[in-house]
Length: 173
Image 1 (cartoon, rainbow, N blue to C red):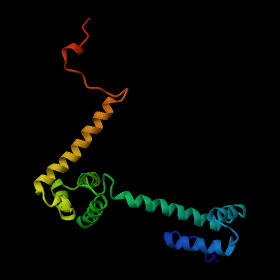
Image 2 (image 1 turned 90 degrees about the vertical axis):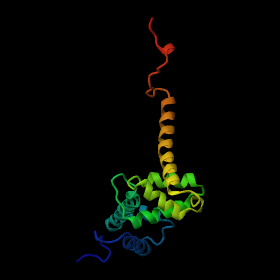
Image 3 (image 1 turned 180 degrees about the vertical axis):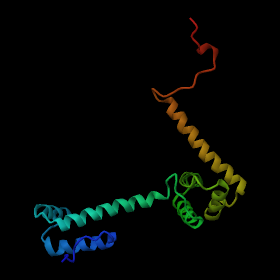
């Protein structure tokens, strides 16, 4: 018969963390830290504890991946999800440029017109601008940042440089 602490693949991260805490309390109560409890479990070859710990780590990594999955190039969000994120981004950045840049970069699949409407809704400093102005600013933020990025790359040693169209730059010796 299976032990009540056995790792069930369908358990959630909070359930596994609670089971792990219970094992520490019952088996490694003298440990002064989680690391020490883990070392004691390893020395005792406590497979149940170690498997639960591994599963917790796996689910933690998956949760971290899931947190950023919405920002991936192939990700598609519902309009409500996008609006929640845009509202959070608009509230997080104190200046309009940073907020617009963050919104544009994190929502490449959303039209600039829709982004402009959302930004206007969530930013007081955007109220004075028309939607056309905000679309233009989003375009500038996106393209200007890319052009600046490429300009810096061109100035670095070993970077590809565009050929000069100036006659004195040619060597015809």
